[in-house]
Amino acid sequence: MSRVVNFNAGPATLPLAALEHTRDELLEFEGTGMSILEHSHRGSAYMRVHEECKVLLRELLAIPDTHEVIFMGGGASTQFALIPMNLANGGSADYVDTGTWSAGAMGEANIVAKARLAGSGKDGEKYVRVPKQADLDLDPNAAYVHITSNNTVMGSQYHDYPDTGSVPLIADMSSDILWRPTDISKFGLIYAGAQKNLGPAGVTVVIIRKDLAAKSPKSIPKIFRYSTMVDKDSMANTVPTFPVYMIRNVLQWVKAQGGAAAMETRNRAKAKMLYDVLDSSDFYKLTIEKDSRSVMNPVFNLATEALEKKLVADASAAGFVGIKGHRSVGGLRISMYNAMEPENVAKFCEFLTGWTKQNS
Ligand SMILES: *Cc1c(COP(=O)(O)O)cnc(C)c1O
Image (cartoon, rainbow, N blue to C red; front, side, top):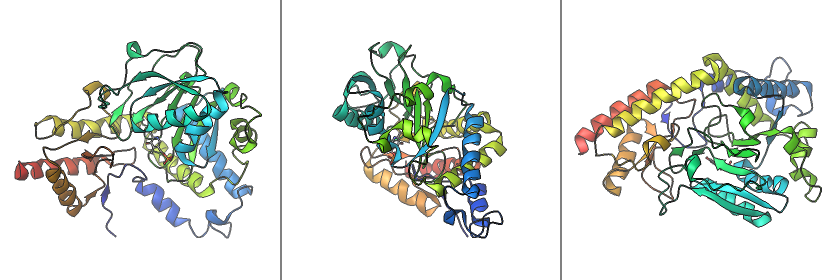
């Protein structure tokens, strides 16, 4: 077996221990005579996994009792639509535009409500920063304020979340949930497609304040209501059992590493290693302002597209895959979610330094 170093942005690398755990019990889950893949979502075997996954999320993120955890299908993109359907009630909601995904969320919201631009990192299409508090123009009557905490495509990240007063703050944390300890009480709703920092594709984790979940209007179909999902413990239809099981295995690994605080130390160390190399030479072009840089997805360019292509090819031949930037922006992107081992980032840094000597 030879596993490459996988810097893909999502679906992304998973902790080896979680994959091995899954492999070891794939054919028979805990003496039940069948795979977890084959169990009923309402049976006791799966229900134990479901509960354990929620308990681990609550514990690792210190989720307060004011908030519920639900698992939903449809990816983060479905939340772009469900959030305004459930919470804007045809009125106005504030959106901060920091790139591809936040613009996508805003576009969907504009179909069922009024998405008002409350701040932007756009500044001539460049998205080189996430706006600071003073740059925001918040409507005190907005239904909520929506941000994208980590901009997976642009390579920027909020390091301090905006203060939105009594207006609920909603964050798309698809690519950085659980990257560090987070004060969940500050948020009305957090959502994250699992395939970046939590597990495989196929399930989205939604953490929602109970009073907001209760607001789902009767004018939308039941299956689209947060209230239904909360009331039915995510079982309004067949919950994606295997993805939830995989998240549980990943969370067990996170816990064994020391939890969210340990993830932060590890993630900051990886980011420092790579940014130190990238900052050491003007061979690398970094456009994101330093205090908005993403710890999860550093993004950079080389002088020419041809050089970038060569780096992608040479890195792949050396066992480092997935470093090509998103097709919409080009360049290089090194995604380093929780599961990425620091020693693999160190190896990549060594490779990159040597490659640069040969190619500059
Ligand atoms: C990947 C990503 C999405 C899209 O997720 P899907 O599950 O494919 O819908 C949305 N937001 C962010 C921040 C992402 O990184």
